[in-house]
Image 1 (cartoon, rainbow, N blue to C red):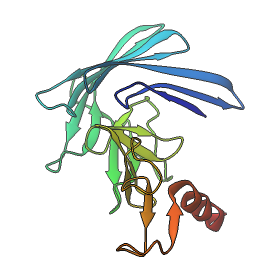
Image 2: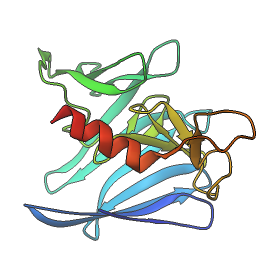
Image 3: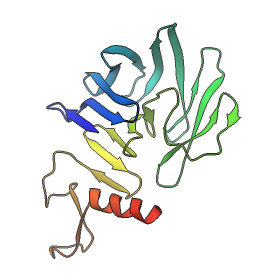
Length: 193
């Protein structure tokens, strides 16, 4: 995986290489709102927002067959809970664990029994309208990243030793034990295997 960010800490490029080849996703921004997503040089999604910066109300998928429109549903805490079609029928429903890790709970009215943290329709907004990167399991928004595995909010502008870059588990001025986020994640992943 390869990521690129602009001067405002917005993700503008996500390049993924796997068994299916290389896919490149480019995001177009209007201030702090991602308004378009291009996949391999083709417009794939457009987004329309409500009154708040992190309130997407509509996702328009651009496919070879034409346009597919979906609308976002939120719960009282501001979490995206579903994508619905223009007739109001839910096509995807989402649930969250206590650490805000999103999971697909229903697709086209059928329950999903697997622990899937991505949207088959390509919905990039989960949680509180933040961009969800299912490849690494983190959400991004307004200049920070949230990792539900570690419960850390990181700021990409922070440097080593500054708040938001490393987690000082010792507290105070004592350097104590410092665990970098990527190290902790790899330890957790190894423990699960």
